[in-house]
Length: 461
Image 1: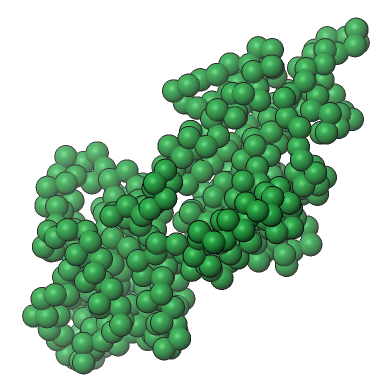
Image 2 (image 1 turned 180 degrees about the horizontal axis):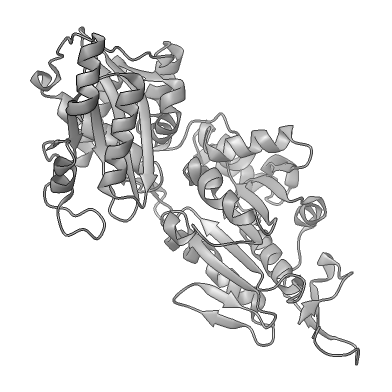
């Protein structure tokens, strides 16, 4: 069954016809229970292959995007576009279920023959189309698949590499489309996509502020303005990308580092040891900060690396190649306190054993409460320098690492939100805990004559 041509979005109707049968009676009319408001209707008319929609809270962006996926799934011709695949992707799989699953079931319940898979959050249609709900917290569930249409919701909460490394390749062979939707939360992937859309003629860029759409009445907006901090109101209702991230632990401190000129070009000093600080994920990302400590105790972060789904051998290879390319010698490698007992992937040996056998000794830092580690990191940030190019992804993680918010009570919880930024922030916390022992950062001045470097390349790793 396919959706016939010429159906208008505003009448909320889907027309079905079996393409395998000869022309016969008029196709059945199925009414999808969705009636877009004027601003949503304008979006349907303006969408292009890649579209970025910056929307204030309560705009209806999730309902809009769900219905876009449903319409495209029903339009797909099983002969011209066999096994059409669409996906609604949120930062967390659990979040996708909470936000969009009920909408997906509600707006498709009138479609004859549609099948709902509750365990996999998937809806299959009679024309062999399928819509799945996914989360970027498990990137391996997205790698290797193809997609004809994608909605990325709350993009500001996604890691910067999600688009280029994971989502964009899934659209390549079928020339699929993507809609980026969300509310700003500072400078991050969503901000980058917004800038790209504004600068690219073939993309669609649309912003909807609460003061302009009139979806929320004036009195309600004034009440919200009076009860929220100015930055919060500007971010949530006026779509400001410059407002501070709500509840961020390090955002203001990173801003101070920028204003003080401590984020820029930070060269590697070959006379100093290169140390690393790790956060190691079992099912998600592993993050590594590379840093040197100057004679006066200044800390120079020169690179940040993050990847997921790889074993210990891959991360050791990265360390080796980086040292060989930049011609430095490693000092110490710091890892979370449970490094010696937790396993990496399916290998029965601990991560500590695997890495050590490959020539690197990971040293576990003291076990302290997360909030104490965060406070230690906040204190140390004033003496840190960051190479902007080498550490850009890690800096974005630090900017957006924040407290979890309780929507029901309208207060922050006393622990961090676990999202894409957690890995870089946790690795930085590993550094902060290790740095409390200054003896660990005794720098050895090395003779970097060509012979010594050659011996290092052969033996030190």
